[in-house]
Length: 126
Image (cartoon, rainbow, N blue to C red; front, side, top):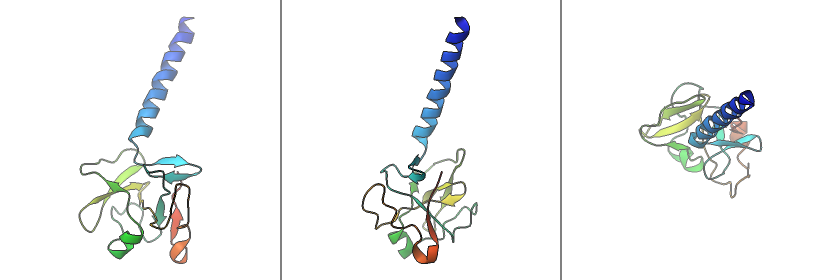
């Protein structure tokens, strides 16, 4: 009886910790892809060097491919990192790759940006 209660408490604690970490993540997995807090699909750009700490999509590019912005003072945690943009703002990265939205996706679940620009843009996957 005590052993069962102890296991239940440990499982509950582990689930709570996992749920808290997931709630703090800047994006979540949904249907095999990463989506932002607004449930819109996120993308990665082949011209971004993974782990470089910066984005290759700035200016007009960022108008079409808005970055998943990170708040000032955001800190890396697990697979989540922060990259500095040319304008000094910060952007979230997953496994070293900056994340972006596609301005022409109209609703959650749209993936119209996948393969754009000679297959340089891809749906971000967890």
